[in-house]
Image (cartoon, rainbow, N blue to C red; front, side, top):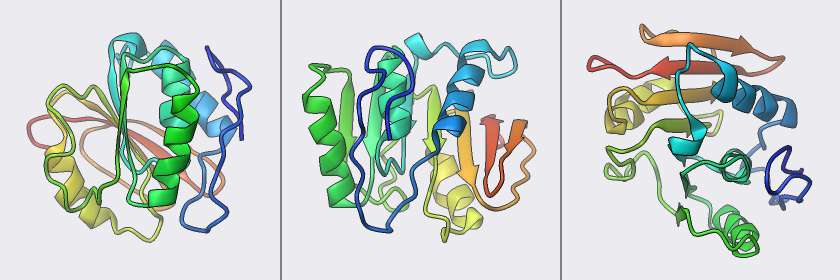
Length: 179
């Protein structure tokens, strides 16, 4: 797996050989970042954004965001090996606009700051959507863009865009007071 575009284009991202996650495909990553850059519906500016890669796995979303000029990226994963592989990549970049955490996002209620602009949520597929809505959504500040990657159908009143792929869905939600 490689960084698609930006400052680190072509650099390899090491991934764990374990089955604990499935990396976001390059085609989907490309779509996400094209939408972030060009979509008037999403209404975000990556260069001014604090992006959370909440269940980061390989870190491909957050690393791509940094490569493309995100203001800051917060990486989080519960798996120690995944966190270490992301750290190993970042040490070689000489960047300092990131933080890395090794937390359970369902338990840590203070993980997401009020300054978050974009939160990318790609939990393990076995995670129940109800748990995401109950434990993760309340942590996210209002007017934040949530990008939710899931293999399940997901409907929510604040959905502003959906993209369907073979075995997964990307759901873009603009968080409001009621979300």
